[in-house]
Length: 269
Length: 304
Image (tube, rainbow over all chains, first blue to last red; front, side):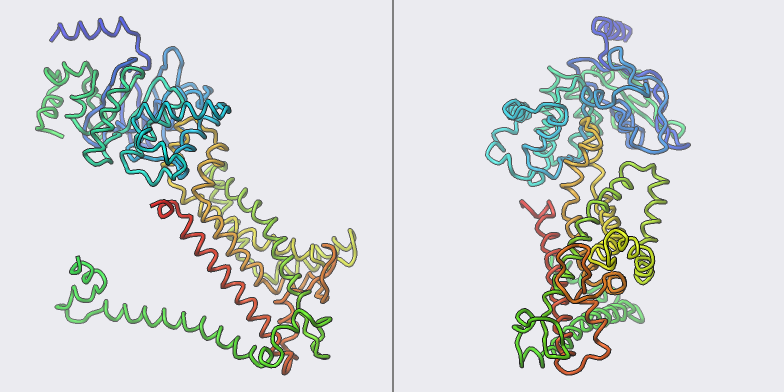
């Protein structure tokens, strides 16, 4: 066990974390959603956050690209760094932050526009004006998510006419078009049917090469299949806590915490 | 499936065993109420047609457009000047009030702090509740003299447009506010997480998503502007002539009915009913248009 821990810390010193949080806490009014969460997200790795519902995993994701700014009476304390950049600083350019840190939601949320516009208009908003350039980016990201062959003849159709799995892949393509470094994914497969879910899961695994991924999932088997690092959230004293964080292999095979062990073996959660 | 439909469509079957079936009573009370409401609309239309028929059977609709002027006491029934009056006042006010109302709703939904937004919404609702005669009175004693100083006579198409704008603005603002409120939160979260500016989100996501609601709102407001009689009657001068500038006085169809109904007899009376029938037809067309827009442009039905 100590050996794996050593390996773990060695791996981390070799590769400085792309994004990390320090003692991050969030409360809605008086209700504390989660408390004291410190994790590191690495380039080219999939970090999975697992745990029962209501323990603050999704809220945690929303902090990382400051989506929490939209929620009234929500207070975030602690620190978040993207490389050396202090994300919590009130004066940072949140638009630049959100361009670097993409977010995929549980329920696919394509805009009520045609497929092409779904990807093109955020690009235009971010200053890509050249039509040819936009077209080539649209094609590239749709190929990246494996949607190009399915939709290339109907780019002018409403995105809402796609199936759930296709919609989710479109949303991922839309995020990829902005060339983010980190992708936050909030249970990206849980609103999909089993086959679409499999397709999206394979897609997520394939994105590992180029991005740092932080994936919230209910699905332990999925976390086992795709994750390099795993964080386990648990509710204690009515608030979410990160009870274990480490390499996936270590967390699944020799969990340090009794609750993790019970959760992984299916006795709890 | 049919079993399920049966259960759903007639809830009374579910509790046959209970002593007295209140659902059955409720269903029938509701049915009767609905029938009465529908019947009222139908009766109004039938009444309008019956009252218009004497004129239409004898003279047809030709005189309304070909007579030299509107002078019912001498048997002249051209109501094109009043049609123009109604059209110009309505279009003018809708063109001015629509952007103002939409901007006001955008402020309320996306820019104002929550508390201020709510307060502002209450104010607009209050504005919508002010009786039209109050607006008319204000227009008569404040607006008309003001325009008179700019360009006599004061009582004019312009005064009508301004008053109507103020009166329909709250309706448009509230309908727009409601349609923006119905834009799914996921779209806004999605747009924000893509690093889009507020204005970029509004132009590219909110407007397309709220489009059908906005159109419907505008169309219903057109109906309201057409029907508004009292305030317009008080500020527009009511001279029967096709206006050549916005400072000319106008008479609208509704004002015409209100002004002349008291002493109209025979063909004159019947002619006024024809104009009422025409107004009713316009309102029906607008309602149909609103319905068509709602059905065809709702994103779910569009491509599936």
